[in-house]
Amino acid sequence: MHIEIRCHGVALTNELRRCVDQRLGRSLDRFQPHIQSVFVSLSDVNGPKGGSDKMCRVTVVLAGRDRVAISQYGEDAFRMIDVVAGRLKSRVASNLQKGRRFDPTQSIRTETRT
Image (tube, rainbow, N blue to C red; front, side, top):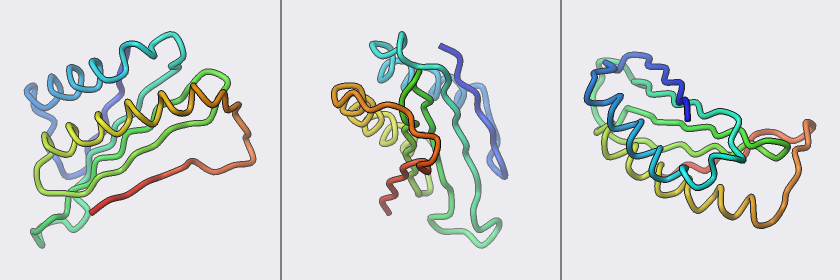
């Protein structure tokens, strides 16, 4: 499964890339036949101000179904990826079980926890 990663103000190290590939790969592996693409966005929301200012957003595009998007804010990119991966697994499973079909007039669903 190919995972596209984009970073804005966050350094994409080899270790971080490996974490994204492994953690999301494990969470989404069983759904691979239904997944068209996975996009990860890591960004520093507040710049040099500090604090809990990083955001991780993962969007999974399911074949012929709705997109599933999860966002998480925090300080540690590795921890955010771990949290998002766990939430994605249950959200994608739920979406596939309900048999939802893609409706281009609907916006992407987003869930954010602080």
